[in-house]
Length: 536
Image (cartoon, rainbow, N blue to C red; front, side):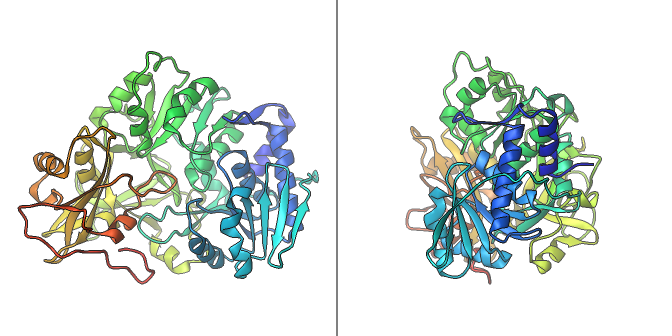
């Protein structure tokens, strides 16, 4: 069975060379034949620079055609693409490049200034700087810059099976240094047949809108999907609230994904009379907000949700198990029969109904990751006794639906009570002026943690921390009410809109932090860094 992206691209080009499969909102359109020609050319360019089968190639390319060609071109010759987050500073990039054993990187022109110092430091041997899709320069440590051809060779792509490495995707790094997840081709196949999107939506007529970055699985899985099912992907370099509705309508998109705060951003756009006049049939959301029924009614769509990570595909999905609604808000779905899942309590037993436990996952080997690139100790720690230990705390309700509670590392421990940061954040978001929230623990004078909350408010907001605290006191148990509140202009996020709590923890309590007046004052606190220099 053909499962690798290049081989599927070749098969599609042979049967339907002129069928458009990839569109950018900028107007660029690529047919199957265009993708094969360009992927072949990009692969040949890498081979000419000494890259061979099994070699890691770092990339920093825009979301869209260039980003997907970075993956397809490397895979065409059996190399392993290693996409890097656009927001990473140069010292992070150098650490990742050295740890991964990368010698050659492919980047877009706009990132050249960020990567050029790696030639001088010896971290890289060659830097391939892409301008457009058919023009490139090779930079070397000696200061040489040479324009190189991007010509197809007509060579067939390297054959690959389910167990062969497709790429390495860095974890989000929300709780510590990013790790390179080694993803086999079989995992993309597992994702593309998952009931997270019911089969009735996986047709040739489907047009999926994806503004997510290609350096995460969410930004590339839908490209694999459309090549496999012969449909269409529409991309935008980055999510823009003000353009979302017009993009969906003008591009005829039937499906899309809204991760984290992006759903709230869309909801906060003032309603229009033609909001329901859309081709959109469904939206993927994670997590599902309590106002999901309002969103469904306003835009006339069905909403699906799931639970996933780079290390595995979709072990928990809503699919057709139940209708995602306000009544099920907070649930991430029910187990996909293709996976075994367990919730294991802190004392090592299987958690019962409504008990919290760490999620453990297993499936056929190719549907999971192959470990962390060149990090055997971390791989062994994550995979134990045949199960992947996700580090996520969930609970299962009486109907068999799973609910995300928190990351194990994000759980707050105060006065012998375990507090879910998600529950504190959910309560904060129920206030009309709050558009984003992050709850986390800061060191307490009395041991364990104190609860701290950082919030973004609407531009016209009138609420102050006193009001927010009173509101939370009515919605949360006393032990979970934040002692400290920071109102910030914007929460630190990565490119998938996940809040970087480690940055907030490292910042700790500052002179502008509001402190609950009925509790004794504590000394200014900051998080203690761990041995890797990251906030614990």
